[in-house]
Amino acid sequence: MPEPFDPTTAIREAVGAIEPELIAIRRDLHAHPELAFQEKRTAGVVVRELARAGIPHRTGVAGTGVVGLIAGGRPGPVLALRADMDALPIEEKTGVAWASTVPGCMHACGHDLHTTTLIGAARVLAGLAPRLAGSVKLIFQPAEETIRGMQRMLEEGVLENPKVDLALGFHNGPDLPAGRFTYTAGPAMAAADSFEVVVRGVSGHAAHPQKAVDPIVAAAHLITELQTIVSREVDPMQPAVVTVGAIHGGEAVNIIPDSVTFIGTVRSLHREARDNAELALRRLAAGVEAGMRVRCDVTYNRGVPALVNDDEVQRRSVDAVRRQLGDVIAPVGAVMGSEDLAMLFECVPGCHLRVGSGAPGRHDMLHNSGYQPDESCIRFGAEALCRAAFELLS
Image (cartoon, helix red, strand yellow):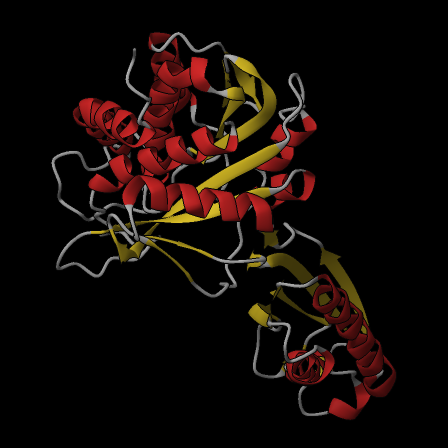
């Protein structure tokens, strides 16, 4: 009589057996980073590895994206596992042997880790496929850093044929030791909107301001008033941020210019706060128009929504991580950064995990030219994804 199947040991041993290969793949990807929608070589590595594992796949999704499919041995839901592939326009300063060979381009956000982790999980899950009740759709996404990649993949039908029912995503965290994980219940990452305001006045001589309409003073008033949106327009139990990131206007000390332009971002975790912030910005701009004789042209762009975790998918995923790796996962609060995985989670219930990548004795940050993760996070991440997939499709 065959012994009962032990998923913990099977997954641990399978991932451990390929860990050296995965680290080599990660270092190769790190040495050859590619920016958003330029990930042709990276996609080629993904295709090579999926083909080695016998996993059917499609290429060219959203330009450079790759989608693979692992069919389970029994009918069931379709689970999407997503990893992003693009790098950042940063000059690397790590000095490691596998540092970027591309001037001004670096995997400073760890997407090389993400791609490699999903490759590893894919190879192991392909071996476990007969035991799965459902299928795993592997989504290797381009252009997360521009917050445009997921939208294009959705527009090109990444959730169809077969239809995706639930999803898992993850991101490395250098503030967390390798081998540790965190999660956030409900809203976990912020919606990211942007705005541009052009304040139009009437130019004139600086010595005769009464003959002009000064857009600089009006813009200064409006920027100051925008700071009241969070403190007086949004529920204090619903976090929000309004930040003006740049302002341009005027060229000389003795000329009142015709216009001033400023741009900024609004971050929020709840739909009500998001709507209130936009309405307040437009209303305050209209008030400055009426009070200071200028015209305020407001362009407001809704970006990615808040990333909201599904309670049931998260509960089962967190439990799976604990079964596989022990008491290594803990809840944390939300952050005001943004992630275009949120667009996928608007379509299907999902769970986003943070995978510790912090190396001993280091205090690294994402988007930093000296970022050096602990590569053991690839193994831990792959084990977590495999076990979560196994439990969600069992």
